[in-house]
Length: 306
Image 1 (cartoon, rainbow, N blue to C red):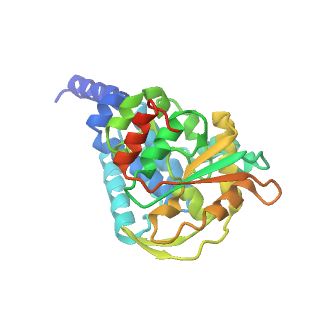
Image 2: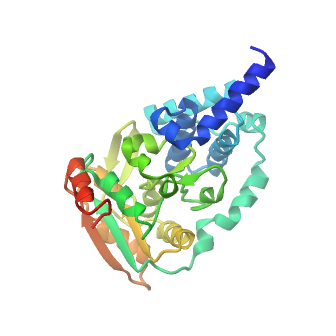
Image 3: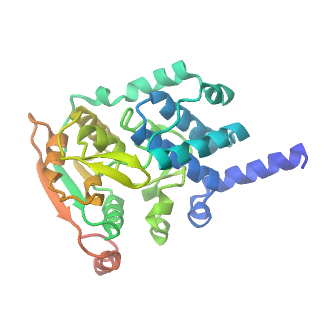
């Protein structure tokens, strides 16, 4: 393959990455892995250099720059390690150097977005927490409610350390700007498209603010009683998203619902968002209906949730 052919293929690939409707039906495998790497490092690593590298790779990918073969092997290695042991490998400085990551500069650029910069801040006037059994339609309901643009919410690009930094980056689009086509595919697929910003549970935020389990490996967890952790992480993230979306109400799909434990922690969740000195009105919306029932409810209301 000539250099011109490689450049043409690269350009075509980059065009496809930015074509969200095309990605919904034919996702780019590398884009999927980059998105999974970033979100899983947010959750399972406490080393911010991991976040910087994952974001750098994804940002460059969206800008049309592909990672080196060595970097691709590192991405696969990281994902395999997270699945098998629940922990990522050590930060790879050589990979960061090869990809042109300037750690001091990138760290300084994120400092204005740190969660602590949003504190103190206003509490949401209302918190709507959707809870329910896995595969019961809770994610679909959360997407439908967020689509009405009446709430602030955590997203697939939100990070506990700098909550809305990625929302300010180019080459990304909120699902509300893409249209109804996002509801035509499974929610798991929409969450692994780098250019598409969807509502998300933000387990990296909740795991630090209200820990309820310890990840062992793959889908194995050690459950613990819900208790307050660093609630400022949650408060700062909520406040940052309220300001970004310019809303006073906050919508969340509680990550506690996917654990085999009663979701009695909804009260703790509300306390973490509202704080002790600024109590909020808390609404708990429990979804026990099936996915088909949720769709039926939407059809009965003319495409809008009740």
